[in-house]
Amino acid sequence: MSILEQINSDFQQALKNREVIVVSTLRLLLASLKNERIKKMADLEEEDVQRILKSEIKKRKESILDYQKGKRQDLADKEESEIKIIEKYLPLQLNEEEIRKKIEDILAKLDDKSNLGKVMGMIMNELKGQADGNIVRKIVQEEINK
Image (tube, rainbow, N blue to C red):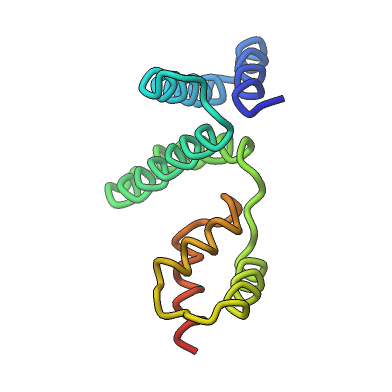
């Protein structure tokens, strides 16, 4: 079952179970996915769906920071619960230790480590959505500067 099919199925189930936060979150996700499909004028691939889900998580993380600055913890908590719902549809993320090990393995194979962009491109291609780019960048810079 594709991610999109799973989201649709879970949305229907949440409607039946009257899970308000799940319904509202999945409804927003489905709208974003539909908008992307219209913009692309073709069916979405799994990579497209994952990219959109990550984008939705990023938006919510930014909102959490804004809500915390505005001392609105109730809204920040709501955004946090939405992130947990969305994360269920993404592949498992590697922890920092696993990311560091993979980066060390990749860097050991490279001769030229001076071009950070090229190195990052290779590493992100290898990790394929299993790690946050900001964490990877931080670790790569630490490893290169050793």
